[in-house]
Image (cartoon, rainbow, N blue to C red; front, side):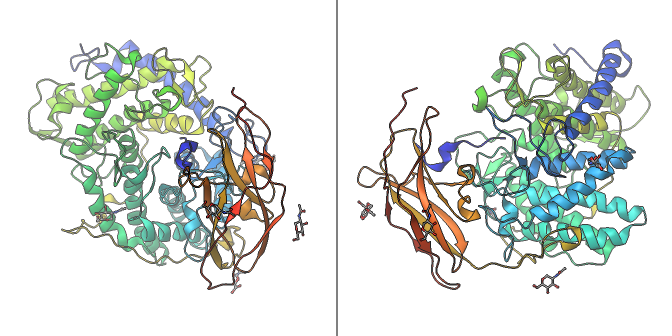
Length: 615
Ligand SMILES: *[C@@H]1O[C@H](CO)[C@@H](O)[C@H](O)[C@H]1NC(C)=O
Ligand SMILES: *[C@@H]1O[C@H](CO)[C@@H](O)[C@H](O)[C@H]1NC(C)=O
Ligand SMILES: *[C@@H]1O[C@H](CO)[C@@H](O)[C@H](O)[C@H]1NC(C)=O
Ligand SMILES: *[C@@H]1O[C@H](CO)[C@@H](O)[C@H](O)[C@H]1NC(C)=O
Ligand SMILES: *[C@@H]1O[C@H](CO)[C@@H](O)[C@H](O)[C@H]1NC(C)=O
């Protein structure tokens, strides 16, 4: 996670197939470590959820805080993606038998119903669902106005997936009408959003790249397939679910013949090898899936080929991995070119690598066979050198099939063991660990790190969520098309959403001439929520993308309510912790009536200038 302000315009196999991994001492140690850490991780996630989470006082009921960390980095916000992934984990834990988690699930349901209607810098909820693409909110569920990589289109899909798991549990437990009247309206909004906007660019899960993200598209596809099946079961209509085959068609274009290019429709100078691709496949894991499913499951040959190429890049990227041979687990990060906080391995991606392999083994065992092809051959060579291109059918404990399963399981365990090596004695999970020393760094107690540890532990323990119906997904059409279905959006009032009505909004471009020094920023603040209601933390950042020697232009676009009268001023944010500088005028603006064209201000900074603190 993270988004940098610059976008605004500123300025020898240790474990070989010959070792019987499951019964050796090392595995027993790993098993007891994982059991202990799983409990810590579950509690760590719960501690970050309002209203009772001990690490996050001030968070509202049902809001999952990304981390208690408030400085360097400040993650004391709630993200739609992290929240949905965390709730998916909690809902699966609940279904696996931890009934004490039910209140957290209901809090999330109510919180998200309200959150869907909150106007935010990505737009309003009505009439077009645009606000659903907002990645991040304050921990009390109010809008966050700061500069950010938005929209992010995975959030609605992931929330729908989490809520659909809960809905299926309700149906199986004689509470179908609750699923239909209370939960489905929330899901329906999210699926409408997916069906309407899947073919538009958005920011990726790392919040850095504006384009099309494999993780996003994979989850969008799952959400639409699962949505159509749930709608059937409930006797309702899913608007947008008809887009699933086209989304699946588009998903195929991320494969370049050798690996999965995680971000396309983008030119950012990266190879495209990215942990994004592992996280995508484990999020759409279906124990019933066929390995040749175009949904690209963990046991899919392309996913396996990608796994090898991606993991091998990290062998040479981080010095803590040096000397670890192919076929043995390493510390895994986001992507080789990463520089955020120094560009380090992440706990949640290292455990995701283990989870990916446990998933694949579970799928082969469930299918009772494994087909090795030219695409996946290199992956298996590292683990079982005698492998050839052929079908392996399950057999006795000494069969090649069983030996390969043991080898892949041992490979999975080696990633989990590597995570163990770098998890501190108290079991707390930060976001990252140092590439040279292995010391934890960046945000402490990252909720997503905890959620990822628990889902990995579930798979290792043989706990698999129910099938989401991947076998019944319609095949992609022969030729792909960029299509869209107009969504239907309505507040989920039965779950507690306010009965908002569509507001007519007009585009207002705030342009101000303001000469600034490098490191100084400009914001606009005013008396309406859209302009931060005089709270500097919620003021709207301007961008300097159009700043030239001829014209020191700072600019921002906002959508304001038609006909309203607004008071506003510009504010300078100084470097070196110097105080903000406000303009000395009182500006007013009347937003034109509904149906009018947008307007642009032509302002010039009026007030004292700032000077660099030269810190
Ligand atoms: C939070 O605490 C209150 C008061 O003890 C309790 O009623 C509620 O169920 C708790 N919420 C969760 C999610 O545990
Ligand atoms: C839209 O879909 C078409 C057809 O799959 C694809 O070529 C195009 O890259 C997609 N664009 C975006 C932004 O998703
Ligand atoms: C919400 O408002 C609309 C129109 O303002 C009204 O028709 C509808 O009945 C209201 N729904 C609820 C649940 O109050
Ligand atoms: C700015 O002017 C408006 C009237 O145009 C007034 O209502 C408001 O109080 C003034 N605000 C300040 C901070 O002076
Ligand atoms: C801002 O600068 C541009 C270009 O120099 C100029 O045309 C415009 O009048 C300026 N605006 C104000 C309010 O001074």
